[in-house]
Image (cartoon, rainbow, N blue to C red; front, side):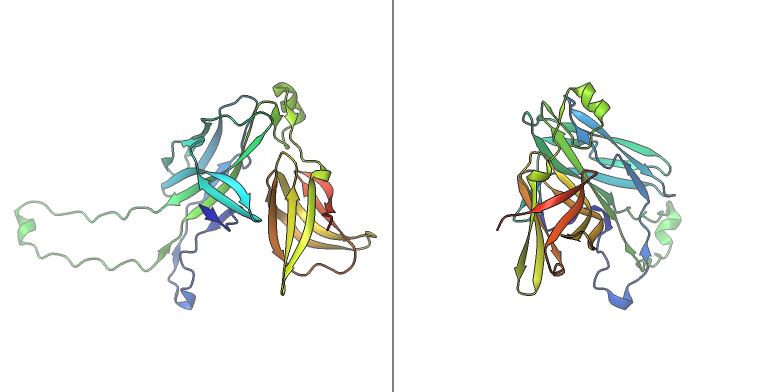
Length: 281
């Protein structure tokens, strides 16, 4: 189980954290491109394609895992599971080449429900090539060469984390197009504004924004800000992606003390503007 992880987008692993000003030069990680960034399995499908492209000049090895994703006590939680698997789980990708990974749902989601997963793509360390060995009688008489000095560097790998949602019969993704919905005869699992609520929890000098999703589909929150009740002023909380609140769950984020006065929480929820209501005390 992994908890208290942001896993939003990609980040460099902290391989050289704490090395301070002494830190040796880091070797650049391979530039990978992964798409789609929001895969889903819906409408009776049993798999979805994920593409990984190596845009670097060196071969790269990657490992793909699918973790179960829930939210507990306001935090993301990731657990090993066997309902959705990647194929292949490990791949070597040549420079300029792309690799197809199938994300296969072995167990269908329950009707009208949404199951959440995180697809974790890790770049694996490149093996160090062994020095060539001399052969023949001359090799036995030759003086052994000194061992090469260790390379002064830290090789950083990149981790990518992509949300994956699997929908049961009669349900479809909240960001699925109208054309796709009609073809699937699906019902969009869009959370309604009334399903989302927020509150502030304070503990000493720390403050947390807590959002609850009482709906049956995830809420993807971007462009989140405080808005004064008279709409005269607006204070940004996060202009980009704040995160996800899974159905029937709460998610919390640390934040500075909110501005004084009556406030509204303004956000873009699954691509559409919304005012999130304040939870009743």
